[in-house]
Image: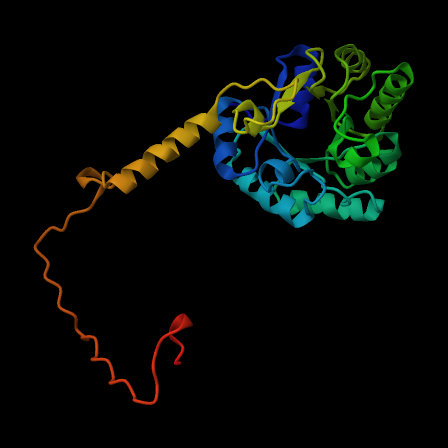
Length: 300
C-alpha cells in the first residue's frame, strides 16, 4: 500500500504534482473501490442529500447523517485522505457550535478534515476550528448550501466585481488556516488566477483545468443518473444502464424459473426425511354463534 495521504501530501502535490484526485463517497463499498483505484481524497459530501436521499438540495442533511456516512467511508479508506462536509446550519450559528460539530465528524465519523462552504465571513469560524487541531478545507464559488441566496445553481464570478470578491475570499480563507480550497462553478480563467495566488492547493469542480486537482460526485462520473447532465460532468461509465440490465436479467430468470439453478443451490449429504415433532393440532370446531371472515380474520 502506498503512503497514507495527508494534508502535507496535498500541499506537496500542489508544488511538484501530480494533480490531486478527489471523489465523493458515501458508503464503505464505494470508498474501498475508489481507494483501490488511487483516489487521493474521499469527500463524504452533503451531496448525499440529493444522490442518496433523493432531496432537491443538500439543505435537509443533518449532522447525525453526516457522522453515519463518514463512519462507513472512514472504515474502508486505507490510503485516501477522508474529508467530511459540514452540513447546513452545523457551523453558521456560532463558532462554538461549529467547533463542536467539526469535532463530531473527526471523533465519531473518523474523518481527517472537515469542509465548509463560504468566504471571508467564515474566517473567524475557520480559525476556531483549526485552533482545535481540526484541518479545514474551504469551498467557494457555487456553494450548494446557498442555493436560495444565489437564485439557483448558476456559475459564479463571471463579472469583475464578483471575481475580485472571490479572490479576496480565497486569500482570506488561506490566511484563516484552510489547508485546501474547493472552487466550484466558476470561470476557468478566474480559477487559474486564484490557484496561482494561493500557496494552498485548489480542487476544482466546474472550474477548469487550471486548478491543482479535480473532484466529481461519484454517481455523476459513473453515469448513474441519466437525467443529470451538467456541462462540467464527464461520464466515465454508464452504470445506470449496466445496473438496470443486470437487474432485468435477474428478474427475468426468477420469473422464468431459471434462477436459482442447481449450481446456485445447496444439496444435502444424505437423504433427509422430515417428521414434525409437534404435529399441527386439529382446528377447533367453529362455534355456532361465530363466523370467521372479513378483514384479518376478525369474527363477523
